[in-house]
Length: 111
Length: 112
Image (cartoon, rainbow over all chains, first blue to last red):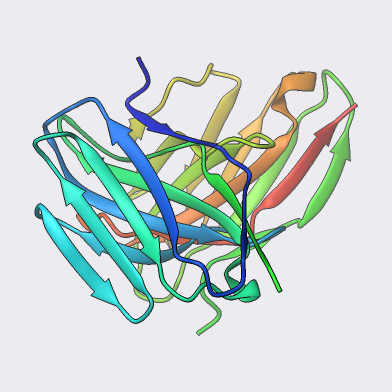
């Protein structure tokens, strides 16, 4: 079983839609949860960072963590064509101090 | 602040050759991590350098080696290249103990 599972998509939505991106993880020792956004031919950039269960909001983006279910989500409200990118969930913690990524979900927001 | 810079941007090699990729970390960062990202996949951790030593290593063969210099810059070396080594190689930097990484744009390696 992979440490982090993420649906690779692709996901295509119309402009203005609410987008839901999800990951599951296997090790309850993981403590830190992040979402990175990666545009084509670019490196990943940090979008959201959470530690505890619950929601964290930043503008149109909301990160949600459910540690009991080992489930993390990213919601994008009022999606824009500029949101078209690959979204990578990443987790950190446990016995190894390294960032572990999901496979990424390719999102296309159609104008 | 230039952020994390990597060179070269693109390169093409043939099987069996060796390659060296370079990374300059973000100003104020002293820890460098290297990741391999195959097409359609998430980044896979190769290794991490701090204080010029390899501190942690992922599941990569010894053909992958690295180095960190006193100015915190780093190199990734891959020997005896295989077709499967074709990927985007990402360098990320952080302050020691921090779990938030800043990534460079990557070096895209194609092995023919």
